[in-house]
Amino acid sequence: MKYQKVTSVLAIIVSTTFTACQAQRVEQSDIPSAVLKAFQEKYPQAQAVEWEKESDTELEAEFDLNGEEMSANFSQDGTWMETETEIKRKDLPKAVQSTLKSQFAGYEIEESEKVATPEQPEAYEVEIEKGETTLSVMLDKNGKVLKQETAEPEDEDEDRG
Image 1 (cartoon, rainbow, N blue to C red):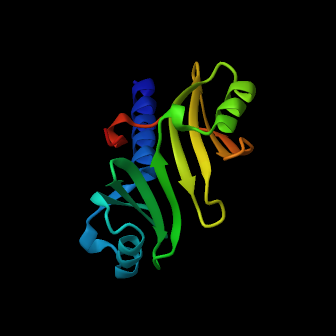
Image 2: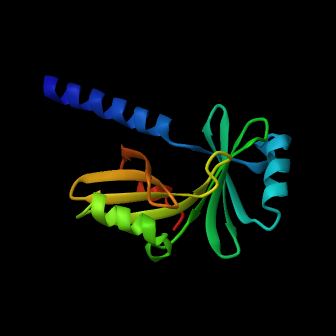
């Protein structure tokens, strides 16, 4: 009986924590006008736009542009922070592919994105997997590893399809 109570409490804690960490969908009508203006100026041709609240200070637009799946993050005051564009692994620069092959041998590429920020106009974020280990690796266009961290497995419901 005691075991069941502990298990139930742990399940509730894990469920609550997981839910709290997920981005929240937000209606466009609830997006600050400065953010909408900045987004529309940067991506006037964007289609199928969906907004999420990443944190109290950051909003993300997921959208399609010229047949590509993209996301762009903005601060509450409309400052552009980052854009990610999904790309195929074959479209990664040769230097990035070479680094992944030499420094992460045995890992399979699960997802790859071209990333642009004000500080780093061209970088690549790659999610790689080997057994139970999933890593998120950020590389510059020359294949230099900028950041590497253990990635949390994504919830399939969050994928855009």
